[in-house]
Amino acid sequence: MGATKGSGTQERTGQRRAARAEAKTRGGGAGKRRASRRGGAPGGAVEADPVWAEYRRTGDLELRNRLMERYLPLVRATAERIRRRLPQSVELGDLESAGIFGLRDAIEGFDLQRGVKFETYCTTRVRGAILDELRSIDWVPRLVRTRANQLDKAMHDLEADLGRQPTDRELAARLGLELSELDAVVKEATAVNVVSLSESWPGAEEEERAVRKLDVLEDRRQHRPLEQLHHRDFLAVAARSLTPKERLILLLYYFEEMTMREIGLTLGLSESRVCQLHTRIMNKLREQFERSRCDLLG
Image 1 (tube, rainbow, N blue to C red):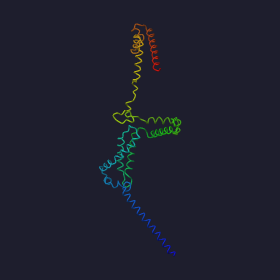
Image 2 (spheres, helix red, strand yellow; image 1 turned 180 degrees about the horizontal axis):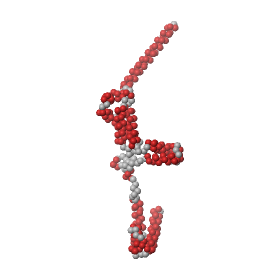
Image 3 (cartoon, rainbow, N blue to C red; image 1 turned 90 degrees about the vertical axis):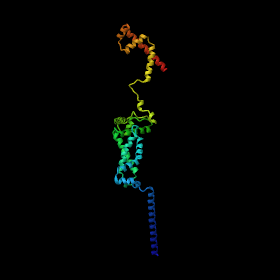
Image 4 (cartoon, rainbow, N blue to C red; image 1 turned 135 degrees about the vertical axis):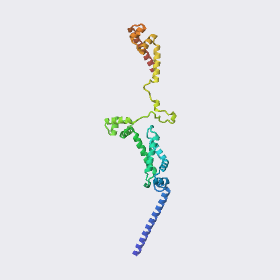
């Protein structure tokens, strides 16, 4: 009786093991079929590509160029994503040119047996090539730019927390710096920002109608048109209150740069008389100016 029970138990155990083995076999077959439908393991599509296979076998430059043309959209997409965080002075074409070198290196260094999708590997290499190019043309040291970014982030965080612009002491405490060290960091950060005068104002859609910053730059060497107009109008009003002799004295003294004595000889007057007339003229103009200013303000 005991022998019979033992043999039955062993038989049931063997049946369960056989069922588990069959299930594993079926599951493995289904997994292989699903992988086959998906194109196999990551990179399997690349391994099955005849162009990739032939290029790996021969290293032919024409085949490499065909592969580069195939993956050029990856370069443009990566360059556009990086371009969104850069100033307008950085050209998209320059980023794409740097990315093409990264694409070439990615094609030459890609290992078909690693089981990695080429798009993933290529995007990383292209992005790295673009960032390397940006660092090489950046005239600001990397440490200075990092500090400038930290300063900008701390400033925005404190404004959000405090609801106002932070003081220098609060900003220095957030960065863990002394006030003297903060001054040095602020001076360095000020030199980081460079503005291109050829850059268009944000929102300009049509290139031919875009307004450049150079077009609205103030020329401090020239007089302001509105001030010139006010000055001319005031002189016209002031001149109407003067006699011809008084206007001549001002003309000779301020425009012809003659002395009081020379003016007196010209007009047949003594030097002291010319000085008296000049003083009276200036008082008259001063009163005229005060009345005009009161009229404008009132």
